[in-house]
Image (cartoon, rainbow, N blue to C red):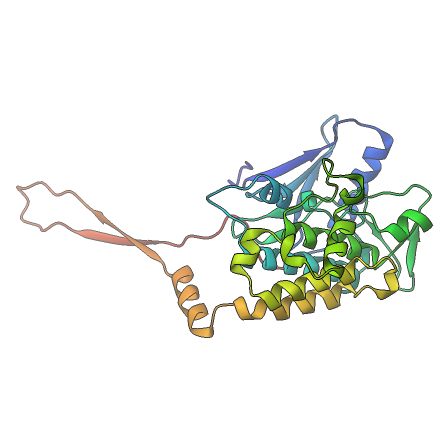
Length: 312
C-alpha cells in the first residue's frame, strides 16, 4: 500500500541476471508508452533497491489461468464472462499492433499472463519479452525462439520470424482454453491428444465440437455463438499465418457475437444510475435532555470511487 492508500502490485526478478535485467528494462520502456484499459498499468519503478522493482496497479482477481483450472464457486466463469474476456484480450492486442504510437508484439500471450479485475475485465500483463517494431517492419527475427510451449506459433518455431499473426495464434489457444477448460498441453493424455490445438481442430473437422466444449459453456451459450467463437479460434490457429485473421478482425467478430449479451439501453440506464448514486449518511448529534433545543441532524455525502481507474 502506498502513502496515498493505493494498493499496488510489485514485480521483481528472482535472480539479478543480465537477461532478467534486460526484460525489466524492456517492460519498463514498453509500458511507459502505452495506455489501454485492457492492459495492466505501470505506475512506476524503484531503482534504490538491490534488485529493481516495477510497480503496477493491483488487479484483485488473479489470472485467467487460475479461474479456468482452479475455479472459485463464488465467482464462476460464465459464458458471458468468457466472451467478454476474449473480446478484452483481442482489443488489447489490436491496440498494441495498430493503435499505440509504436506497433508492439506481445510475444507471450497465454492465460497466465491475463489478469482479471474486480469486474472480471481482462488486463494483459507481462511485457518482458515484448518487442516494438517500426511501422514498415513485417516481422521480428530472433535466433532464440521465445514464448511458451503450447502457445507458440508453429511458423515462428520453424522460421524464427515473429509476425503480427503470431500473437493471433497464441490468442487462439487462449480462446480454446476458455471454450474447453483444457490446458494448452494436456500432459496426461495420449501423445496424439496432448496438444490442445491438434485435439481441438480434429474435433472441429469431425463436427463434434459439442463433445469437447465445457458443460457450462454449452448450457449458457447459444449454439450459433459457440460455433462462431470456435470457428474464429480455428482460423486463428491456422498453420499458415497468412490465412489467420488479424487481431483487429478477431476483436470485431467477438464484439459482434457479444452484442446480443449486452444489456438493453434501459438496463444500462438503470445500472449507470445505481453506480452513480451517492450514499447519504445521517449523523445524529446527541443533545442533553435539559436543553430545550431539538436534536439536530447533519447530512454529508460519501462518493464512493473505485480504487483503480478503468479508463483507457
